[in-house]
Image (cartoon, rainbow, N blue to C red; front, top):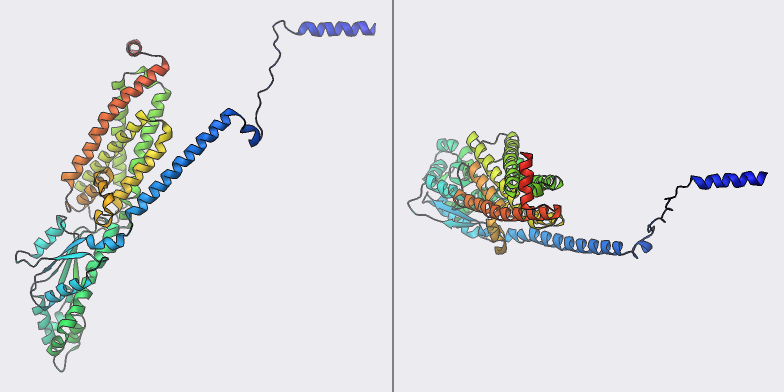
Length: 451
């Protein structure tokens, strides 16, 4: 009886199993160790890709580091390539001492002073020589400087009112390559007062001592101790520390923000099959219209940030608008240029392109051409170089004018990149339609149905 009941229960269990029952397949083999994983074809392929990517980035970092550091290689010994103007408007002992001192100070690590003593020069003409960008700086001995010194040495009352800083004047533009100007240009020009004073004492010290007489006053002794000094004429004072970021971090942000905007809009378009379902002209115009509009807004924010943190920097509304337009043009160039690569190359190439583009543009604007090896002079064609020099000219109210060259180069980048971008966009849309199995006729039909 018991056995019969058990057989009956087993028969009932067998009846529960459906007729179309398929037994489960065994689980796929999942490697748990590196030794097991390396035996699979997919993992071998993965290792090969990792090795290739690592090698490419190894070459990239080597190239970029050498390019960046090579840009500054032996720059201290190229300081003599910086041309400065020296003019003797005095025609006396001080002017002669200034010229003699500058000749003795010439070295690879000291700017090269071009002596021009033509009678056509005036303080205003010397100023404009620097303003026009013909020289990085200038120094001149003031008219009648020697006569005023002799009068002060011979008269106690005149000596009490004598100002040695009226003997020499130097002109420079702090807004133009601020970091280099602060470190090289100004220090060289400031030292001219000391150089001239030493040369003056060496050449006319005995005669000057005889002018003060047997019982000189304290004022006369003070004039004898400091007969010559200099006064600064700064075309555009730029004392704020944030100026050191204008050709470095600001340049990086301008490039990166448009790269991320390009990448984001491209990914959104691909995810929603816009390139396959919408006519190329429409998708191209929409993306670039949004890019130019938001570039307009991003450049406004960038310019506003510079003005917000200007710390007493004397700039006006006209310069604000011109700087804004300069940033906008640079952002438009970067978007279109980087989108060209997105049309023809896979996303894996983007890090290489963006890093190279950033390094080249930043290094083109961080050091003036006279201090770089000749190989790097090609960088005058880069957008970063032209944008920064255009901005410094704007900030200095037209000093070192470069708009005649910078604007055609920037617009040239924009126009040429747009032409390539249009061709690449049509290619991108064609690839997207083939991948989605949609033809141009299907695209028009989709648009008609949507309307």
